[in-house]
Picture (tube, rainbow, N blue to C red):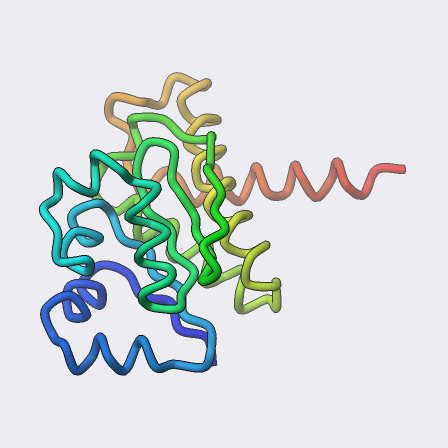
Length: 169
């Protein structure tokens, strides 16, 4: 079954070789959603190395763990286990607030639970996450002072707008 790991689960992987080995051996799909600090721990590198070459880091993580990886940050990067990668252009600096990654993980888990294919779920969740923050910023809610608690309602509204546009004849 699918496994999505974020936050302290990633810290456990980075500090426990036995758990990391189990994660690497999984046959079922694995999704990791680190920020640069978590990525540094997983790769046993200095955080500066991750910031200096985010693309190399996300690809290395994806290949090392045979996982889909979302390296969160300005222009979040997504990599597949085969090393193919994507960049997300939605989002803004207001997303650096505490809890924003939890919202992303929730969006991703929700799409996966609805049966979306893994790659579409990841790309969709990451883009929706950033686009919802952009929508809030356009309304004057951020980037300064934007909170994670404001994002789920914005994401739901935007997602429903997208569905309505798709269903129009």
